[in-house]
Length: 181
Image 1 (tube, rainbow, N blue to C red):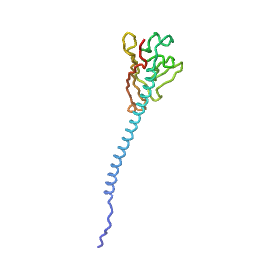
Image 2 (tube, rainbow, N blue to C red):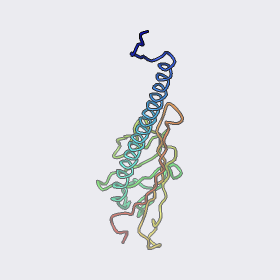
Image 3 (tube, rainbow, N blue to C red):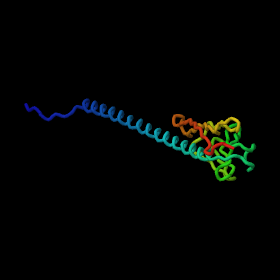
Image 4 (cartoon, rainbow, N blue to C red):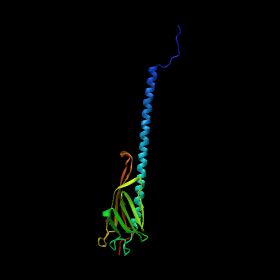
């Protein structure tokens, strides 16, 4: 009798090995897909923060350099620095180039009108869900430097509900020039 010393794998052993390998590959691919989704979300959040920061810094720079109304005809009351429009969803002022300038909410986008020119500050893939201004220290008798508080909520426009991101933002800007007669 001859004993064959060459042994192979049985069909059952091969199927078990393939099943274990498939489970391992499935879990690894699941981890990879979740890591890719997390990275996409982190990049989207970073882009939204970048857009919000740009818009807030742009508006703050112009609001900070506002000048008093001294008869230019921009604001409804002489001697003031700012005027709320659209029930607080807009702010009008005279900028450093003596132009009438206004920031306002228009159909979910932030609109700037300056010197008769209109431009939108928000990108097409975002919408503004809330946008309000508040003014303190505007009158000469209160002895408080004028300050403008800006409240906005920028939101991405996503195809799926889980891909929609929202970023609330608030800042207060004081006028650069002292409010002294």
